[in-house]
Image (tube, rainbow, N blue to C red; front, top):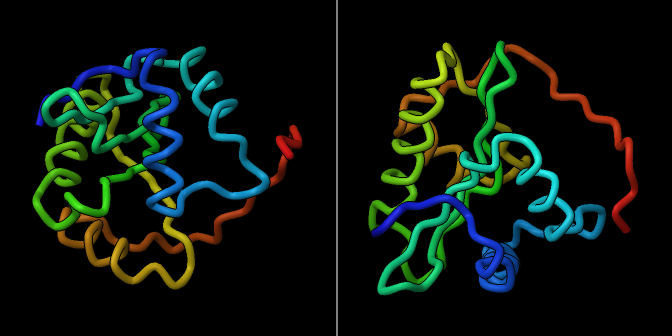
Length: 139
């Protein structure tokens, strides 16, 4: 798998991938999320390609205290083949190069497969409660 930064021509394929991976929610406009990411560390919006086709994504970021990972997706027909692990390793490598000491991520309740995947990569539950507040309504 080739890993590179997002390009505008990837947008349609990425939205389709995220929909197939059930990452899109009615309160998040994926196209707006992409545009927002490109304004802040756009080089950490990574795309995985096989034979020139988008098959995986990860959005990473670092705000000086913690790194964050979002929109980890692998096309269903390529899942369980090591692509997500490879993409996460690259995201972690790039975050580490920025001086990032710790990476955080969130997994939706009930997504046992994702929890098992991240645990296999060395992620452990933090003793925190995740809170959120919408500042902009995408719907």
